[in-house]
Amino acid sequence: MKILIAVIAYNEEKNLPLVFKDLNEHNFGYDVVLIDNGSNDETAKMAMKHNIPCVRHCINTGSASGTLRSYFEYAHRYDYDILCQFDGDGQHLASKLPLIINPIKENKADYVIGSRFLKKEGFQSTVLRRMGISVMAGIATRTIGFKFTDITSGFRAYGKQVIDYIAMQYPYEIHDTLQLAMVSSMGGARFAEVPVIMQERAHGVSEYNISFASRYMMKSLINSLGCKLQMKKGK
Image (cartoon, rainbow, N blue to C red; front, side, top):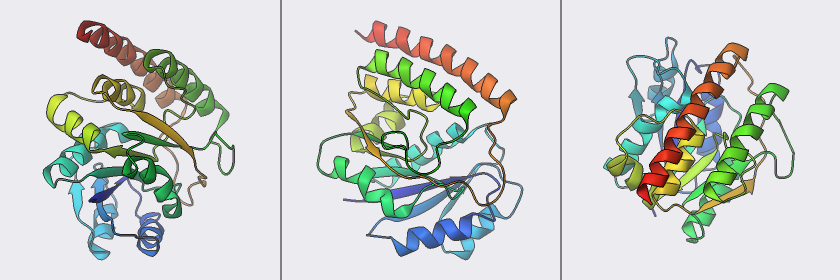
């Protein structure tokens, strides 16, 4: 099966060398592409230095979710069977990739989330973000019917069904992972969560400050309502 690891990054020049080194050391036959979300540092040059293809946004899309459309289109265009999101901040571990890929390879799921909360090991994020994650996970659980614990996790894998559905049948903006899960459910995706360990970023700061988190949550609630209406209409 053709597997693509999409590393998403915004101003991660200091973290990417370690990220690429980690992926190289644990490569079991997958390809890697960097999605540069309008960085103004040397992020894109890090990809060139490591001979990794790079898709560059001319402007920053406002959040990591803005990279979704790019990597789904890329995976569909080059006919990949499995697509994995891997954050460029160094929080994800390449050694854990088989955990989120295997359920898809074994045809047990189409959308797999690496959850830091199932075993509560490693970096658990801030209290503010955990509160927001809990709210969004509750909405997803009630709407989709699958028990989510870490709906916003950036460590995710998608199968062919989700890749083709998002790339070909949902040509709209995707604001957040709650909307992505709900849209994927509309396309018939089967979900799974697996326990993973994440680590705190070594360099830089997260874009998720209080102001950003407040706006993000407001938009997420509005988007989830829109998705619910779409799902009812589809029925």
